[in-house]
Image (cartoon, rainbow, N blue to C red):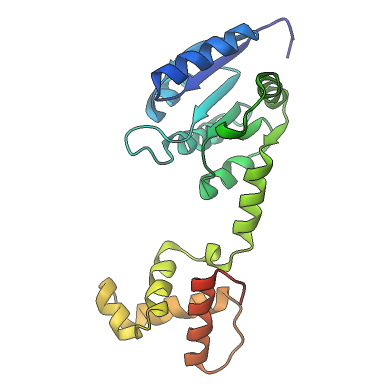
Length: 220
């Protein structure tokens, strides 16, 4: 990209003061904030309207203040693979963070509390626009730790089943608790044991090992 041409930015941040402050900061360093919005839907609409070079988005935004911004970023990357996207957050949201990072270059994931130098921050933005992937080292550390956790391999339903197994519940009791058939619970338990790579042995012992894996977060 021509260095004389301002980088056109869509900024998504629900906090008005932080949004205005960041817009002013970017303006001082030669960025052009062409839209500043406060939620994920408005972010997607703004990108469709103005076609920016860079999106900077907070992760927690209305209505639930969980991961709306990050989910919007992932959708934007699917629709516009060449769009530069930087997610700013106070925490690491593992699921969508991994999908965003693995979507290719032009991606950044920075933790707000670890941005201690304005020029370094601006340089990170320019690197993302240039095609690099810039990830805070703490994010990398958290994601690698998560990948080493066997529980992360389980589906949401399998985690629910495993939590009840850890409570000592039988398949019949779990089926009643989750309003599923006992056969379905048996299948979920089988999937859990397979994903944990527990060796074929007495089923009762394997259930205990699976429960310990869940409670300790250790590899089996």
